[in-house]
Length: 356
Image 1 (tube, rainbow, N blue to C red):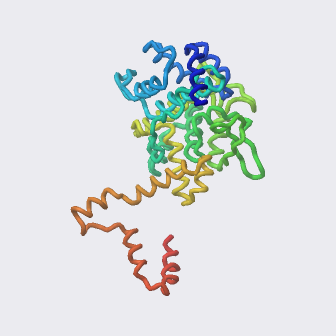
Image 2: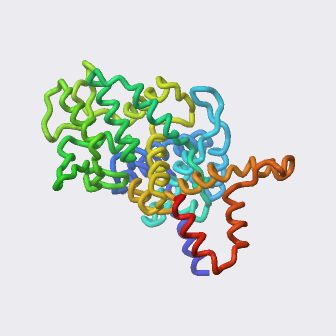
Image 3: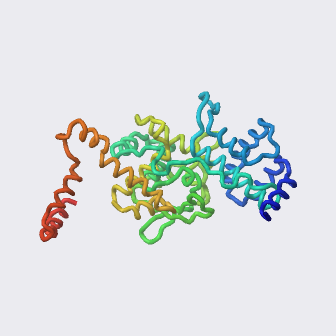
């Protein structure tokens, strides 16, 4: 009963949701500029919706209606289209944070509490990884005779070999390259970090590509200058935006013949993670390589590898339509081992080790 009384008092003291309230929330959030900008974008979407629907004092039912609105078709550059699940999740999460704050401040009840977000499948990547041949073809296709070409090649190798994100390339400065003993590291300002405190090893090939690019630069630069800068007359020597880096890398893929909406700059990081797992067979090392805080994120590479090796679709088809055609060799080996005399398993294991 006491909870109902408190809630009724909140209802009676509700203020209208206004632009000033949104502004106060943005000022309250103690986040990185990029995160704050994201909140502004997401809440602007909600503000436009309540304005269009004439809603000034939304109820819980209105938040549910807004969620349904996000699930509908929206007009974009190419006509009516659905918002991506990740985008819908961000829009709704911002609204949930906003009303959590209004309730904590005693301004407005948390009408978005316990409203479930959009379900996202975290078990699959939305971008494809490149195979070994494609990685080499794209690298060979980059013209390294110019400053811009040397710059692109260095960025490409950082993505492939070190798994860098475009935002990490954008944030890197020349002084972030540091030598420790006989090894050279690039200290990154990683995702969610405020300092350049995440070292990645620069192997000789990557280090050489960076040195080749830095020696070719025609701008006046110091140790505190951005590692990668524009070469255009209008913005020469200025830091390159993450979106521009993404476009450059995408164009490198397209010009080498790899044009797909599932192949983007982020595919290079995905390729690096997949390569880390395939090369080492160790999920812990792949996690460290990708700088994932949550190992379940890295497990996606393992699942993709297992699915690729299993070729389940072909096995199912053969099971129904062509049972004589090639049994899965791994499964066949497992079945054979299960029939071996336990006393002889040691000898079998020693024999098999030679084929690892």
